[in-house]
Length: 268
Length: 258
Image (cartoon, rainbow over all chains, first blue to last red; front, side, top):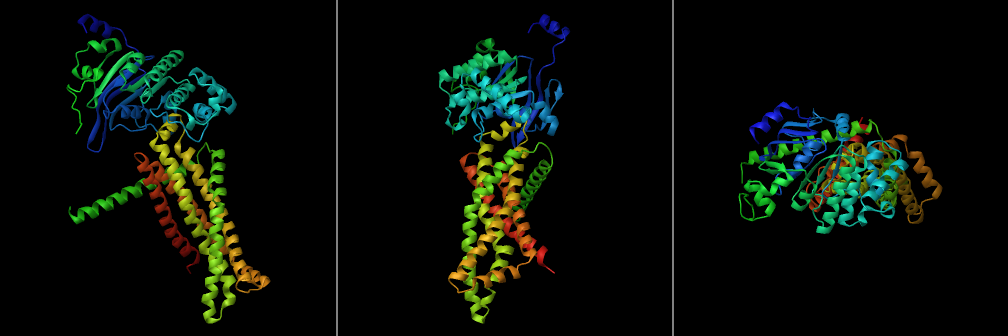
């Protein structure tokens, strides 16, 4: 960044980030997973966190959602530090979120449309008939018809489950949506379908998104900005168009999938 | 091998940690029972699953227990000429002890395992996390309906088991041991006291609560994949059966000690 641009950025007031992690630390016993993580996501921005397995990507999402409590640091959502919130205060914050889980995490005991409408009926207290109409509309948006809506989730393929999970994540029209490995386990064509659906749905809603993935083709389609997590910290962050030209050896090794490089692979 | 005292210390600390986790889990569950929303539909579903669908296994257990009890008491009491006590001992034995305890043990195996396996699978497939992100408290949505349903339906099951068990003893008494039908029934009802039945039903409510609590607790704390769910299921059954036997002694002592 040049000196001129630095002075301009200091003089123009920056909008408050929709989501901000400040010096977040989380350890499980002696294993330190997040070691002073800093990250901010602006309103309407799509940030993708990349990183190897076990680097703390899922832990980061769980700390933001309150599923795990950070040992220290702040998780600010619209300026409010949400660490330690419980009960009704936590539920109020969670109304801002939607999430597509890696395994889709559909409820086996409910039909497909009931899964999609769950946040509306149980979270927002909407009448079942009204919620059902919205669920069927959201399922249509992800390319699933009414016959599937009435069926059982156990009969769905991996790609269909992801699409139902996506419909559930957007059903309540949240401000912030998390995608946890949205294309893992899918064939490349279905992966591309999911990526495009994510882009369409997010553009429709104008939502802020945070995605974690290993899949670089997915990251290139979804992201405005990419952040690399390693050693419990964000070691590089930049625009998706900068990732191929960045001079960070870790990022370079990761995006090209090379065996040799600075990553210490534990293959023994 | 480490220092034996250190091993004992670690085991003791681990035990205290488990007691602490279970106490917190129980407290959160009970506070969720008395706060809104209450999921009536789920509670009724669980009553069907826990109560109605357990009726055949509990009924069969009670029928043959009553029958065997009549036979054994007859054979034993014949040694000192007290055969006429068969109906009295069958009804008291069933209502006070065998009805609630055997129903509790059967439900501990059937219901406790099912709850732990279902919730354990939900835990390892991130469905519990999904519930939370959808602004739904898992304690209210999953634990409370199971606790309430088990606590209400187990005494009902035990009451039915008592009746079926007495019928089992009656059938053996009449058809195999040569008792007069009217005398058998008169002895049964004359000897029976209200406390005999109520103590059994109180035990049943406690057993139902413990079975559901252990199933939910171990399901919520399962780890890993299929192996973790299997371990949670085993732990739920074993712990609920042990707690049933311990609480049975405590309730019996509270009701009948002078």
